[in-house]
Image (tube, rainbow, N blue to C red; front, side, top):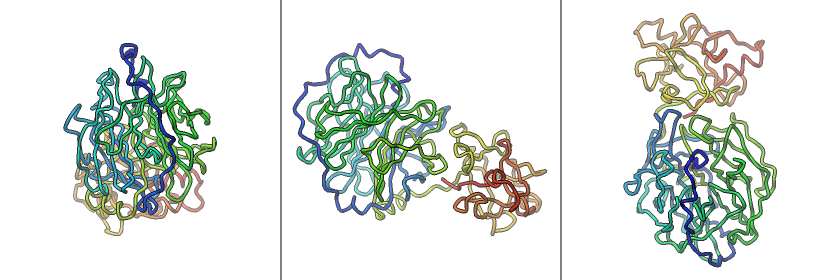
Length: 465
């Protein structure tokens, strides 16, 4: 939620959000038939980019078969945008309810003015992620406090859902909870997690008889996991070491793998850094989160502070059929997986993501201009301009209609020279040469079985939305 960036004081918001009330033990619910059949994943998110060119505070949707590499739907445009309150959202969270349908909760805020505090959450319903209906705002409290970064879980003994969110109580950053049966009305707010330091961005899951709560510690800027055998407010004990990748981290997101195991995602502190980092471990209850290589995952373009859920094959198909897959691709470097192929001042480059104009990394991969067996890369933001080599350097030029240009702009797609599950691109008219980066500049160079491992890695890319 980027609260750490704000410089305004919290003392003025000292009014308590509500008296404590007894809370029943939270235990795991029996998974619905739909949840048990999950074979894919969905992510909801909003978008930002370093200079704001990619900022959009509507609800975005992406899907994935492996939960690691994501395909943004609707051309990475919002599938729905709030029309009330601040008329924008941040931090969307998606939950599969007990009836197998979905509910989406989100912060009522458009943009980055974190002094604009709302008492409400945005709420949508969805049957299969092909439509989002029943839009409403849900008032969580009546105090002078924000209502940020919601998460929700099912408490079987209580027969209600808990909605947990970041708020201010007594001048301190805490996690609050309200209880509901229908996401249309809620009970009074209760302090849910308030240790001796400020906390932000909670995510709650129930696994077996244990309730897990992951959060950001505002005192040291790290992510932690806590657990409770009862799930009662302020009954949690932190059991993990502090986690961080990159310069700063927030928005812990727990995702259960469809085939077992867990992943933990963390959002970068600001849109000028990498958007997501990930860890994995087999058992959520252990303190053995291992950082994942960025080579292994690719979040949706410009995605920020989202939520992941397992979905069925039918739900995956319904979402893709309704919203459509992207008409463009990006090329991710194998040995510098935080970098993507782009054009800048007409030069073909490999630059660290994210950047603006973010469209510089987006390509229409079309049948080769010189041979339909190959491919050519047309710029999305400069239509009619293609990546081509000239004196072996790669640059962006307009199609001049000549046979030379068409040949220079055509590449044969092959199995990745460093990893056959990735891709390499061989020059059409210089077939011993491959598209590669060197000192982050793109060019075509001779590469064969005798070439170094580094050269082969330089010429290997992931084609991804």
